[in-house]
Image (cartoon, rainbow, N blue to C red):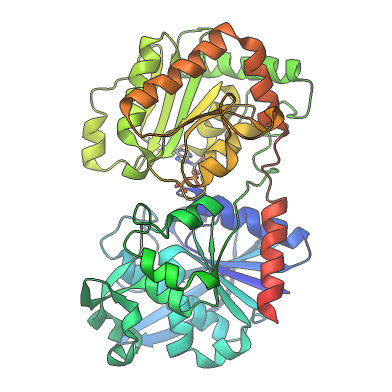
Length: 485
Ligand code: ADP
């Protein structure tokens, strides 16, 4: 069976958050399970420095009087064939410094979706059985298939949309769509942005046209049918709930592997005796403390590794940092992509000998942080799945999370849970208030400082939890098989 992903991220080529990890991890595992997988991504600026690619083909596309000269490059990475699409158009669509956050993002990614389908339609590579698209940036492939590529649509058996985050839906003025030769006046009203039918909602129109939609955790699937997380689409989704299912993400445990992670100071096998894991983590902690100018304290070290957006609970993160500092413990914040207002919120937080603040995306440093830390704090307001709690567990770092979305499907409170003791693997709080944040940090801090045997038990439960892509990939393969018949 052949699967083609059209996506805007695939680690390590292009990653801004979990989407990149998931496209790569899922592809790799599905290959191991016998699927043939390829991935099509935009040719961003810094891809070349990451891997050598060869020119696969060049062709031109004419849209609305403009000519796009496209170059398709390919490379094989861990058996996955990755195609990158570059466009030498005067406005330069992909070859920019950042993946997202540009004023013309909707236009850029609609172009990318259209180019990727044109590439498949040229049949220079085998047509997939399943076309797998991800989030709003490539979601419009499903409507494009119906309106612009009917022949390709008839040879692809199914188009599956995975929604990693419903908040971002991609809204575009309808008249802009005539650029893509779409019959703007014939498009169904179900594509409309709810409050203004001059605009089209890309996510909605994709939900309408895709053969199946996957949500990245069972709890988030329930939550998006309520007004707390439905982002205005709760009724629309509820009416179509038969075409939805939930598959919890995993992580690539070869990439996130403390036994051969080249970014660690001291590697360790997560299946080794706990004593040995603790010793190696301690060596990493010492190394990291020196590297970041933190004091060589024995107090617990907490980390926050996150895109710094409203979704991730920035007020709670700030409160937690203050509270950790007051308790005489240590913390590290790697918080990328803060908006100017969030940067302002954090402006009074300065790095000290107990606190390290960094607003950059730092892949290498993040690995060392996962290995060195005692706990990872994730106070998200909502969290479709979340990967950092799973990466933390893989490195023996205890998650402290808010009970929402995928966090509540993967982390179970050591004292308050229906799960057996062997599955309780962290600290969980419910209400997104400053008091709850302080309370949960107190609980973790007390446990670390006064009850090391319980702390070690939680670590053991984290290390033994299967956070790999094995089970998710089996579920995706089952779905692919079902959808191909
Ligand atoms: P989201 O997809 O909402 O950003 P996830 O928890 O699903 O959140 O995935 C986040 C991924 O991005 C993880 O691999 C995490 O390590 C990485 N990440 C997030 N922020 C940073 C950062 N500032 N520096 C390095 N890696 C980061």
